[in-house]
Length: 151
Image (cartoon, rainbow, N blue to C red; front, side, top):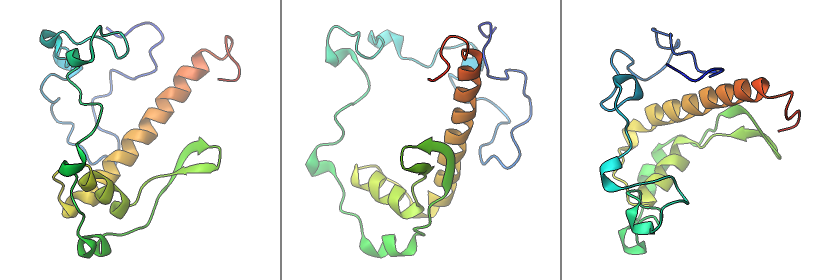
């Protein structure tokens, strides 16, 4: 059961309209399956609390410079450079999501094997997850506005 006051609707059975993710079944080790997705067998603890960095299974440094890929400029030219405006505020105005070109360039440069044809779906998922997360953050902040009116 969710903790009291949790802003997440745990009863929602249907996916949100227009969501690009298949919600017909939860992924393996999803919280709704009752199993924790964290690799506890490796002795991982919360970030900043581990006694030694080697215990953390997450690579925090990024790939070595030699592992970084050179991005093909011809591929970049084929990807749209249009950016979507978010509802998430920032000091410079509304947050701007990365374009397909920006996302591909950054991901490929970090050494990840990405398919340029997937960028439209990746961007749609990226932006939808961020927007939904922001809504949940605002719901959580609303629950605590008596304690902290200006988070």
